[in-house]
Length: 442
Image (tube, rainbow, N blue to C red):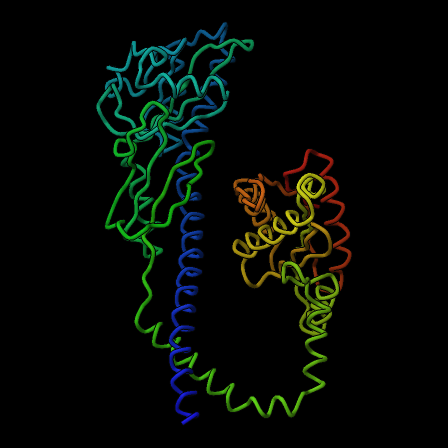
């Protein structure tokens, strides 16, 4: 009778554990998948708008170099034609002295915009003033263009003449130009239900700021942000539902685990293995108790293991959190520990599994990148730095913005890796002395 009760209780307990595990697995998979989609979207869309940003910057410099800021129409047309020939993602260029459209290229497509005063247009005023106040590129859109009624993004750059407002240069990117890129990235990652909302301070209507919307988002979609230079878009993606095959597989797994546990319980109690205890102590000695990463001893042990194999080249980086001591002094060490854990989780999410990440002490981390040359290693570290800079670190008592400084060096074989580590440490020192939030290489 007792055995039957145990079997029934074990069965229902297995069901409960299965449900909990499936929910956790699906949530973790959704979050990992979502973060990867956002990363790829940021990269793809950034490439498109980079053309427009560069075009605006070039024309701004041409205006600044012209006498008194007076630019001949022929010179404007020549420069604009060259820019549109070089940057295929840019559809039009406009020049707005005192905020009034005076020069357009191509002319026929944009002539109806001439004379448009964006600083006195209620549909453009706030976005224009934001560009003046921030003194940096602002991407507005999608908006309906006054010149041809098309949906587009306006990449606006403020031009100053001796620190006085001169006007704007605007590059135009049609909405249709980025739709395919968005669809391709999302389709490649299996996303079919999604919605992306653009940025326009002059229009609070979500539907009119809609960049793209497909599928059904009624089932609590995941929400995040896409960063396009200094502008932020909102993105909503439907969550994947658990598959029956996964539920069944987890249930079988849990049942087998319980069965094995029952069969081995007596054996484990009677045969405590000193070798197992030794391994546990060894793992604890090699692991950082807070983050779960390798500690400095574990990192040295991993290098020794690599030395016993084939000789390989690679790169190594040392990085830490800028002004971390100030966080501990201001919010306390408990908050500092929370920051370290979340910082570690983001690094682990962004870095490939074949890299070796360790916490060497305090807020300092070491990243070993086997078989990766210094150029590619610098790109990986720059990507990591940028993602940390964009991330909002929400802890129990505050929302913090962090930056990280990174020093990178390379090694030609595993024997001289410790020399490379010293060089990377010097590069980190230079990154700190040159303003922090940057990557330095030797």
